[in-house]
Amino acid sequence: MGTHPAAPLDGGARVSTGLIWGVVALLWVASGSSAQAGRSGAAAAFAAAAAGIALLALVLRRAQPVSYRVEAGAVVIEGRRRSTRIDGEVGATVPVGASLRVIGSGGLYGYLGWFRADGLRARSFVTDRRRAVVVPVGAALLVISPLASLEARDA
Image 1 (cartoon, rainbow, N blue to C red):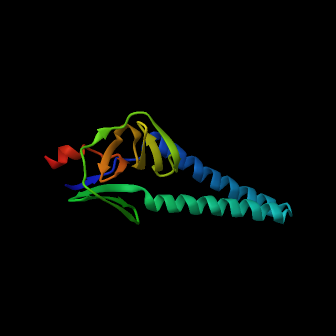
Image 2: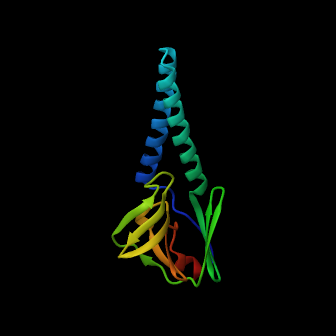
Image 3: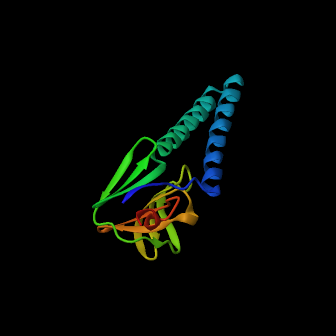
């Protein structure tokens, strides 16, 4: 029980996040260059693409896990601006084996989405892949990355 800080973003997530913001900056520059050259259609397309990618990045930043709260009968993933509550009996953590992303962010402010781990589907709220653990919560499986072991803080 208690609140457990999320691990900081790992190198892959920091690189992915930086690359996305770099793409946004390049698209803004391309928009300005196109506008100066009189290509208003291209300028509008570059600006729209930059705005869309920036909006997606900001939404995912709001969802980036900052802590995991284990309660009686639930795990609450606390994001920067929103929380996600998963109800059910909380089981013991298990290290993550090989996994495959089914759908998710792939590193932009963490590894958020759905993964297939050890043949089972799991919902992912991971900031550092090296610290990822599977937590059964009722019928659901969560993959999270607390800074320290959940059991160590509970003892």
